[in-house]
Image 1 (spheres, one colour):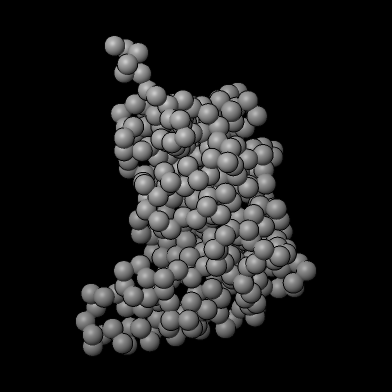
Image 2 (cartoon, rainbow, N blue to C red; image 1 turned 60 degrees about the vertical axis):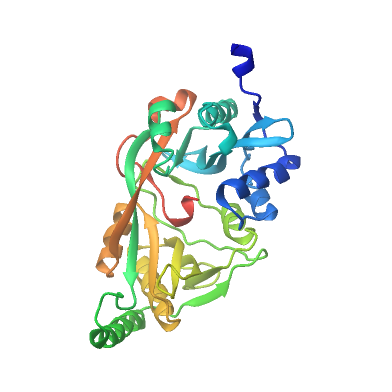
Length: 341
């Protein structure tokens, strides 16, 4: 009887040839919208020792996926490799078989074999308990969604909405007048990223930003519509912001989502932020927003009329010998925008 009830699937690392089967599972769980090209980029093409997804295969059928993105980190001043946990899914026909835990452990064993330090992520409410109780993760911080409104909320009466819209627009556009002139260009596969010389991080652990990371994360993403704003000399910029303009979050307007926000100093960072806000206002966007748990960024955002809205848990698990050294408190691991999927 036990043999009859044993799972038919077996865990293994994915191969590129598995993409059609993986894509079919994504379609089953999340619907359309993710192309084969996008999955190949996300799951196989990261330039830093990519760890293929762990799959549960039942013959030719993909019954489950646990995927991470290999992510270079700086931990206590040293360059190390980590991974971001991105996708966990089980086909409805295979639930209650401990599949996600099995696949995650299978994936972590491969990451540990390669010398990876830790896995981090922002699990949703469906998977949070699994990561905390079954995979021995820590919940160390909260990633905050910071929003700068550029138009009156819908609940504001019509007679007041017009003047409020005008006041918000004038403030947004006027704030950029005192800064340097910004250059804005679309990000393309051939885009050359020249990064500002940023101050040393105050957090124990941060994503190690580099030209190859930017080229993969923003230049190579299929269907990506990113733009790059820079201040200062082109050959050595004072600030760089990567953003995209996304459509309709329920209010019929577009919004600017900031994914990268680098600068040589807090002053240059503030100037670049105001330039993005002014650009969003000129385009008629409803807001500018970004996600981060960085304390210095949060203080700067607050001074520029960004409001903290919803939050999500920032969690992690150490691997092998690094488990005793994993970041274990708020502010020890910092993420911003594109550092999370």
